[in-house]
Image (cartoon, rainbow, N blue to C red; front, side):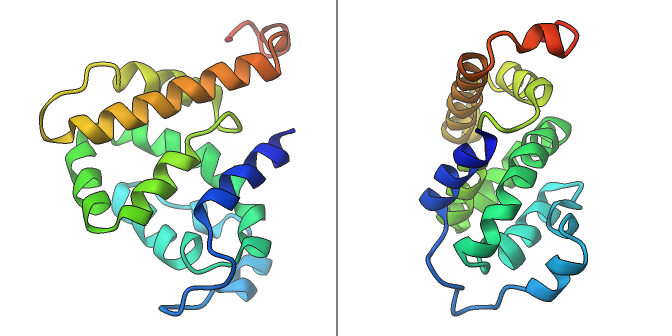
Length: 160
């Protein structure tokens, strides 16, 4: 089920072929599939998008989608105070914004999605539009996760 959700997300954000601006480092991915999600801040996330999310064709990127869906909400929560920086990056590159938003999905870490939804509930100032979009995505992801696995709360210690 998670793979199907990830595939749908990917179809919305990926181009059929690698970008003319760069090539997908497939050999590096074969050595370590977690390389794209080894970022700790928003600039690292953006570099990962430029290197992997933007340049890898669907056939390669499908395998990365679930890792991005798990990591991106965590980084957004950890770096919420840097939302203005994310907004600047997203304004410069609208496809990056779409990548971020579509990576906030039901396959992500439930606790991170819950925290992200709470952090993004009061939106104001220069980042209001991005914040509201993040909030909508996080809430939708939580609703979908709950509808797909409503009995999961028993399995994960009652955290849902």
